[in-house]
Amino acid sequence: MAAARGLAIALPGTAATKAETFHGNRIPNSTSSPVAAGTSLLRFKVGRKGSVRRPSPRCEALVDHEEKAAASISALEQLKLSTDRYMKERSSIAVIGLSVHTAPVEMREKLAIPEAQWSHAVGELCKLNHIEEAAVLSTCNRMEIYVVALSWHRGIREVTEWMSKTSGIPVSELREHLFLLHDSDASRHLFEVSAGLDSLVLGEGQILAQVKQVVRVGQVSGGLGKNIDRMFKDAITAGKRVRCETNIASGAVSVSSAAVELALMKLPKPHGESARMLVVGAGKMGKLVIKHLAAKGCKKAVVVNRSAERVEAIREELNDIEIIYRPFSEMHSSVAEADVVFTSTASDVPLFLKEDVEVLPPASEDVGGIRLFVDISVPRNVGSCVSNIKNTRVYNVDDLKEVVEANKEDRLRKAMEAQTIITQELKRFEAWRDSLETVPTIKKLRTYADRIRSLELDKCLQKVGEDALTKKTRKAIDDLSTGIVNKLLHGPLQHLRCDGSDSRTLDETLENMHALNRMFSLDTEKAILEQKIKAKVEKIQA
Image (cartoon, rainbow, N blue to C red):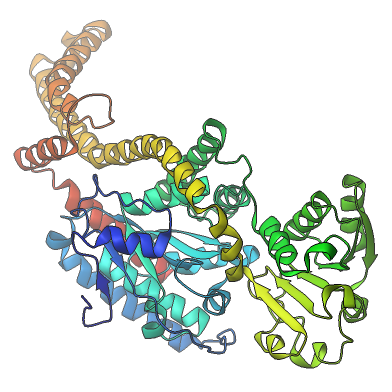
């Protein structure tokens, strides 16, 4: 059912189908979400792809900045007036993005954010009116933004508009490819991503390293808040446990090894190992390509890279294959002598266009005269126009599905084994997050009780007289009042515990919290929301 803005909400009974369509191995679970299972999933439909030029960096005048700041403050003040409405829902964790399961590479490359720009992107996201915390996970197969939002619907709208502005893709077109999950569904998704269950190649190890890198970048820049930081760290724990306690990593392949498999599938059978191989880029992906070529029996590979040092390091590590270095200035001449070209650089513009390739001589007769380009970069290194050239075939990361489908049954079985571990780690994270709900009430109740204790103690001391008491007696009276307050608070505070260590449910704990807020007029939730809004206003004014 499509809403007025083009959103498609998964109703009960249809959520599982949509999840399978969009996420392959993804198993929806919203048992602890504040929204009923099924309605907690909000997804966008997959549709046609588009091509829009990426905008140049903005240069705004001071007056424009002041006007935007004033508008932001006005929006936050309106939210402050609506605290009674918004304090009923806690800040939501949400993930919005697209992946190899929901969008073609043509769309993903426009939204890709290089690792060097993750911190800047997080800074911009946290400046949005309703976003408290943010993290960016951008790889060749996905671009996902994780946020903690003051107001879920308003926050997601702001993030979607930010994605549209930075990519140059209209919001209406972007929504056709996005997926959106929140609270327990968002957490489970990240845990599955970290475990390699949502990868194109089940169990591949590179994604865990990329999730770890999000935390490292966040620690350096200070961009991660306590919720997202804890969620990513627990996801890393889940990913490690899945790989250690199941056989999901046994026989698992990476994007690079799948690329090698695809190339060998497309080459004539007797000549696969003897084909002339060229690898453009000697980064992590390129190194893995060379490693898997060697494992498949390839004896020689030419490597084009900007620096010789990295190629030399790979040569020292891999003794089973002859590695020949070529500088970038010899890239096109090297392609002319190759039958298969693997590209894996971080270039944001294509390295090979139609005019570069159509002048090349055909590949060797041993491979049928057809040259293969296997491009595993996002953004792509090989322009789509190259595929129209005679005797040339171009494959990108989306074409690796052909290799992956061969082991589909084994993938599903291994995914089910890993789900038990993911559920355990997810419960630990959600218990920790639930425990945060009652912390402000506990603090405020203690402050309230201690203020009364101090006032009554002062009255008592004034009546008795300061001179009539020794220091020892005064301390004994002070300790007595503190002890009485602690014993009186022990029962109520015990009923605010929600750390998974007892049988009390979250609903019971929250009922107790609301009751204490009413009885002692603590107004905790309203105070917290107003404090958050005040902090956002001060940040905008700074």
